[in-house]
Length: 261
Ligand SMILES: [Zn+2]
Ligand SMILES: [Zn+2]
Image (cartoon, rainbow, N blue to C red):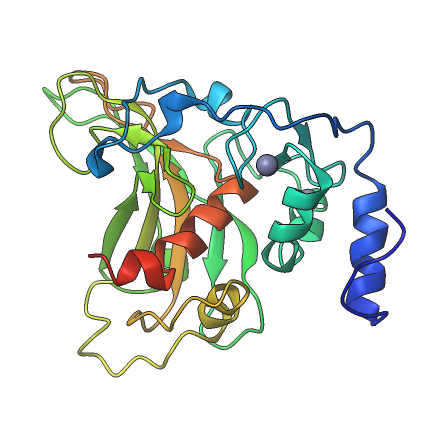
């Protein structure tokens, strides 16, 4: 890949540069999508939730296999250069930051995507976590979004990508007898509609990469992966966010999804 179709701007040049790092990709015939990633709620054939590791092994744009990871950040998987290119406007906001993130400050920290209010793009951050042991309770892994939100957090959970017809997990937003997979937890200020917080520029810039409309979120936002609790055990609830999750967040606010809800 030596050029981008649109123009020869700086962004296009960098795009070509990045794509050229994405080597040895299979460009054979189309590979069937994986049925187990389809969304049950849309009435399509259904779904056996898979492990997190397996969820990284399908193209984040079309669910096809086999995939290659972005050579720079190793945090997004694509079946073809076409799919990689289609994700590029969003991916380029964070790829370099993922590749160059500072070392994990401690084993208790997890990687998040922070959307500052007044920045041009989001940031890759380390979020403090702690294993809390209270009397007569199972140990619980607690995440601390306060350094980023500075106020009481509320959160939304994204466990289905309706645009890609992909199931990330089950049993995270409501009860399920066999919860599995994961969701993208999106933390916001719980009082974001009433505290006069300003619109979030970096979040709007992220959504704009795919034509998504403005969301009603105001104030800072923080995204991370959340696992379902295993019975009473809650000592492994929070995991590093991946760049594939950035796509799931953006798709969650796509007009076709927002309009359908
Ligand atoms: Zn693909
Ligand atoms: Zn990348």
